[in-house]
Image 1 (cartoon, rainbow, N blue to C red):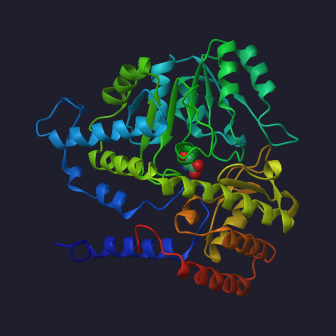
Image 2 (spheres, rainbow, N blue to C red):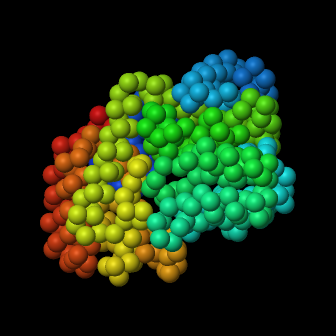
Length: 413
Ligand code: DSN
């Protein structure tokens, strides 16, 4: 029996969410539209199967198909990223990071990572996360003038603090990360190197951002951001860490793997291997560049003055609007963004002085550079007319017109 007949309330919410996703301009840098094929695998009967363990070494009978799906996912993940070893069971990026720490260091060890308020992630040592409670974090930040990573400063901090692990990765840094340089710094202080490439995974798979795989001991990712897969985690590592990573994930941190999600990850890796995926990721980066250029031309300030990847971090300080106000105003015009701290933000995280914009989701719908230029104008119009509901309505109509021309993958395509 269909969902609509059994549970019209939840069916209605899902329908509303489909409408919301189709009718808004989604600039959340960490979101995307999974393909129908990914959604089908994720919504499949594999959800019914318990498969604790790993292919060929399960704690349940009846794992023939689960084994095949996971083996294919593992093979495709390694092939896509050129990695020696993969684990596809991590439920999320946070669990993937936990497994990496468990493998590479001991409780109480020092880690050197990017501060959360400068663009790092909760699981990179924030005091409110397990990572800041179980390990001893020391943070590097961004250069106050350029907004970019000062690699010499990272090296100075590494030499001073002698971390056991250096963590690389950011949720809002709009520039290329120099993994080779981080490896050199790690080698100088005899530390391990963990790269959390959750945001860049799709760009890396397509070769439009350098790969951390030659340099990292362990690289973690989520599969639902630029990679366009199902919501979940991925771990890639050097072969020598493989057995330990597997043990850390199961039985160390998790029970039964989500076999339906693992099958959907396999589908996403397959899609990422197709030639059109390279063109897609090139368009993601080009769209971000145009969005940044047009915002600059409209007088907005951007952290680092632009972008090399899929993200743009707008510094609202000169406008005196908070990130929270900007997020709310834009959302009333059906433009969805998230408030985001800028480096050295004087405002607290629930207000912030910035907004983060990203292009993976819109590019999946086929939005191009012309639309990006128009979206930049719409954003500036809204931000220059805070509280003007008539203006929000006008912008909403323009957003609707654009959305009608671009079907949403997985929903109306
Ligand atoms: N919450 C994600 C983001 O939006 O960047 C990071 O995990």
